[in-house]
Image (cartoon, rainbow over all chains, first blue to last red; front, side, top):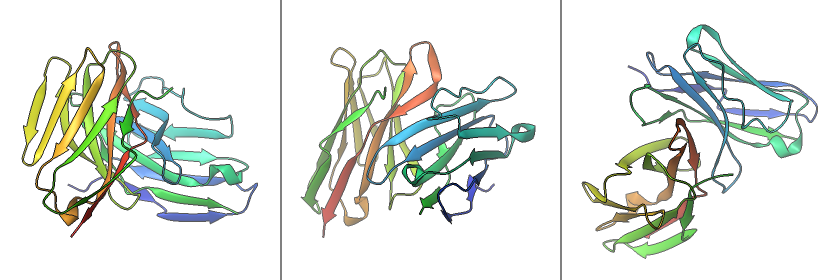
Length: 113
Length: 113
């Protein structure tokens, strides 16, 4: 089937506004990850969902960041009161729990003016 | 803090030459993965090596793992212009947390035709 999809592909917003980024994982993948990648940098872990377990939120940089995963499928990453330093590519990945390989979406490029 | 760190940060070679990238990590791991990223978008899984393996091959890719030195290398033989991309290593967070992964900052490979 289809791979991991993310929307929007690009988002430009003004400082102080809230944004929502969406991730549709591969069907049947119970693990879902969000990462942030600043320009020319590596991936920064944000949050991890596994089935119905409590998510691992240890990577969220501040309380302005939150994420949810409804029905064990689609996930939304919300950034409130965006700041210029939030500008980055936000990548979502999903994984079948028995395997280590993560399948990445194309990312959402967020620009905060 | 992140586990994997790649070296060099950037590598430029001629088509046909071999490219070697290294990754170092800090704590004991269950496995180490290499990913490739084109144009700052989604990552693609290349190869996984388990902690009890020392070497693994996949096509033109050869990965080695030295757990005593906490390091891995990725060798791309007979490189092609299409190999131009950023390459990242990813390690699981610890022996006891194999659901969370840390990515290094990547090696940017440029293969000149």
